[in-house]
Length: 140
View 1: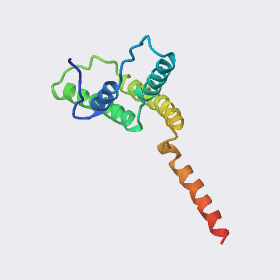
View 2 (view 1 turned 30 degrees about the horizontal axis):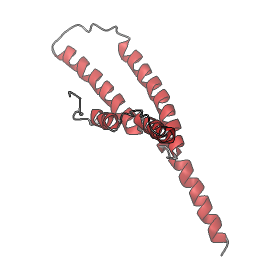
View 3 (view 1 turned 30 degrees about the vertical axis):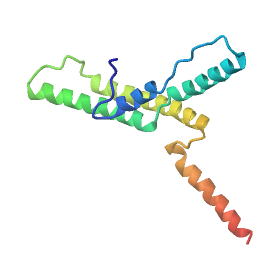
């Protein structure tokens, strides 16, 4: 079985680990209650199956950005003409920003479904918990 297990940036390794945890469900002619439990377990696994992390978005955008910088450096160093339009670097920055916004919004929803706190919510969460702890002190 040929499967990519990840490179130096570990993004592929994290994704491969999610794929390898998937198990097949084989229907049987036995109790339908058992089958519904197995299907329910499969649905739970599928919800975890495509779980994105904030770090993965940061890694992806870093790799794309640094790759573009290296591409431009190589072209300039070897004095090749850039086959991309002169507006490409700005278009790439715009696309990456749009991707980050959309992907982070998706991750935020995924985190909330799991009961996790997104990094953009840490400040608000810390403020809410400190208010709760202050109100507890007043009871004494």
